[in-house]
Length: 258
Image (cartoon, rainbow, N blue to C red; front, top):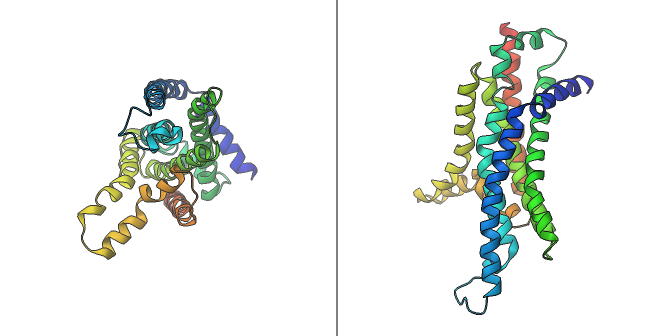
């Protein structure tokens, strides 16, 4: 555990002492602020004129659906690009700077390298999700609403971010060029959503059922709406385990080649 903590601490310093993190956090906060203000103003208008808005649905009059879900959906969209920007250097830059060879020859296992870097990435994602939760927290001072659905939805976004982190760490292990790692990571992240998008293109019930099962959007929907489904959690954790395992195998193969 101490070895994992040393790697974790090193990567945490790399994240939170880097100007890139604060610049990205600032950009994310600016975009979230704009979108949250628009959603909140629209919700306030619809609530004040609910009797006159005959076409207004019940979801549009629910602050969780009308304000917080678009807010968290925007966060998810930003994470698709932000996580690769931070994770592209985790292994690719180590290879480029030749410090990766020191890791391979040190008394550190491949699993410890993966876990140390992955846990540090999770903490970075947790910090970004915490920033996004400030907006509902401030809104709580002005309006009363149940916290549970919003927290479960935020937990779902964090889990999806954890899947992105596992895939992006794997992408970083495949190359020594951080830019290639960045592009490859975005391709991996977007591919998760394209699976659900192409589902309607097939007529076969078996194919559609399979695509629905591996569609991250299908599993995230329940969490976003404030409900926890066991099959969704199992699917997300399985993806995390798979890509962390693949990363460990890539590192171990590099050790044997060295």
